[in-house]
Image 1 (cartoon, rainbow, N blue to C red):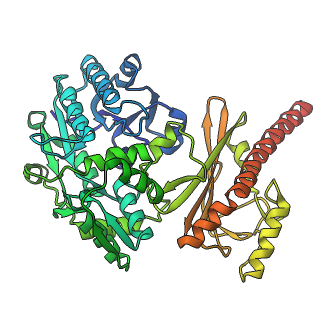
Image 2: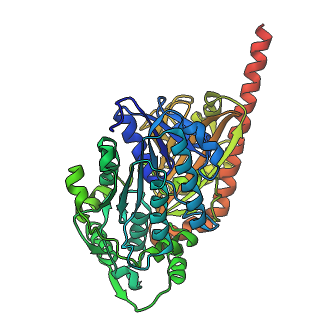
Image 3: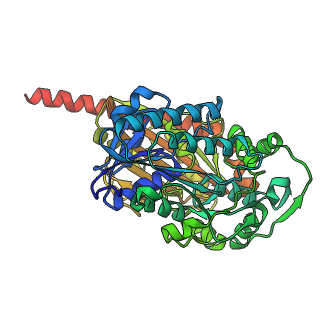
Length: 494
């Protein structure tokens, strides 16, 4: 039975890479969506006004019932690979809780995205868990559509960012055996198309569908194709052995993959992930992209707001603190922090909107002036441009040695650096409303240009951290103080 046009869709994993993109597609297509989130305050500012966000956790069975009330179709996009504990056990428990709650709530359909891999072979723990989760969901008796995919190629995806970082950073790569293993990569746009098409599939046709792009290639061939499209020449030297543990530690030095995630990911790469049953092509009438087109699409979009969604978003939503020096995301380094204020979003954003120019940077202004002087000596713009208006901002405005790249009143300010630095830099501010007022998030992003860029980032990181922490807390103090003054002035008029 196809869902009625206005039926309610439940989405888990909406803060993750696939879930975030799927949510935007559902919203744009006019579906009524409800997102299940452990931290609703993190997700709520990122969804359309028509989308519900409810607090629930798949590891907490009692929290799922209210979230599932009135739902027709549920997307299950949950996994625990980033968990510091036993991810297989957590995946099993979460899936069982979800299946039981879905059955009790009368959900009519479950759509699940898992992984390819021949079950007749000795699968890695990660792929084995992906298949086990699907079996648990089917045990609910609810028609379940399971898509099994190989690596996903798209700006911001875990696999693509790993490949991007390796190719960009290493002219010569010592390649372990997994680099020669065959995969059938699929573009993220095609994954979303399959997930959306599942809404129209008759319930009696629910089953397992293997999805992939048109090319069966090794990981080495994927890296070579990426290098070709970026105009880079890379040498891959195979070696007979390199354990998953050593490979994951090696990846941790040059890619965005945390060691514990990398170990699980690389362990999965020893298994070929190829489509053996092509029935999805005829059932869904989708023509997937080939590898060249998928990489070209990812490259076109990689600088668009650092991709629409990122694999690291789910780590941010869980509240996991970054490591020293910022979190690696591809070749980029991301340093993010936030502060809670007891004022509404408009009041919290007001001092952010006035930043720079004659208003200053709220903290260590002498260092900002010194940095501007150094930039002038290096032939840059320095601080002499100031800002167009002391209070108003618009996209494209110059702001000292920054330029306004994104601006949403009372919500978001994104600045891109135009100073002389060995790389590219961005500074972003976001204000998220919550039950206690608002949370102001500040994020510094740096894309280093070679070794000079890395030395610049890590040498100055203690200073930058001190300055940015001081700036954020000063902004919060100004917002709180101005709100108190406004309340006192209002009381005086009365």
